[in-house]
Image (cartoon, rainbow, N blue to C red; front, top):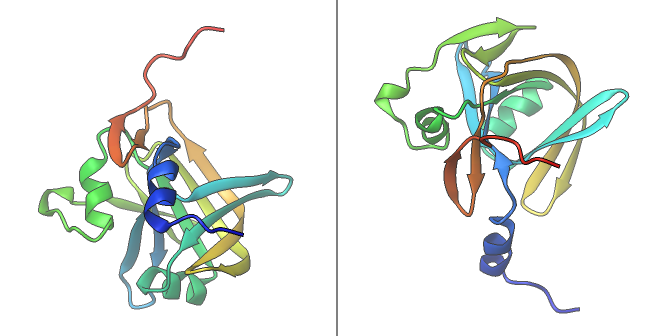
Length: 161
């Protein structure tokens, strides 16, 4: 079987519109570990289950140690926060937090999910952290979306039909 190249796969995958979220976990020393992700997927309604895909590193270690994580869906004006938590610190990002079930929730996020890890599955160079949602909330604010390796400002008006 012929395998597709990484660059070709990345280009094709970039054509799938995703939301932009920040994963959050207390880091064990009183701080907050955060990471921008667009690999957030709902899995099941009963029980409410989601998964995130995380490469080995600081966030992977924090989720493994805590056994839980928060998912903060960013609003359409959340580009600075997205870049900040993607490893390109932005001084003006100035994240504001509140705790929900002892998990950091970004103020102003479009939706928040408090997640308890049920299973971790290693796939290639990532781990899928499958988790039950123990709390969630949302607002009617438009989300930040990512398409073709660029940010876009929310979904706009829905199509008719």
